[in-house]
Length: 145
Image 1 (spheres, rainbow, N blue to C red):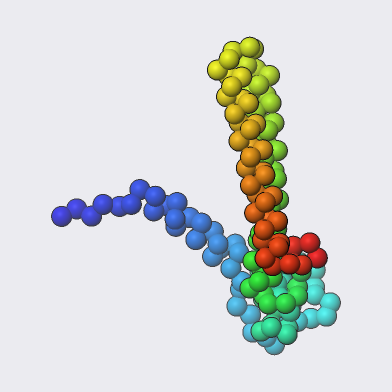
Image 2: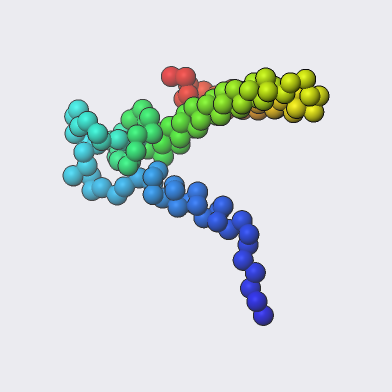
């Protein structure tokens, strides 16, 4: 009997591999952690503080505020990083739709396609803004502090 491979298996494995490779905190003994130095050396990226289990060194700069629980600090840093990505994606989508609209040359089908792309981009931006506002309401003072 032949075992079928799931066709989306690569889509599930790749983000997990990238998370482990890029975003996973590195294990460092507390005595040798550069995050405990005062001030933190340049080129060292840390999340969390020493009051909640110790700071965690990361392999890339996520934009952590180096305070509080390391897991929450890293989570909110990733959310802030993804927020920047959403903004860039929406702007690029509107620019592509503008070029598409300009190149339509009064063809009703191309004009409708461009306006639908602009509408979808702006709706996606509004959904993201409302989700961000709801998240900030549920967990106040984390994103705008």
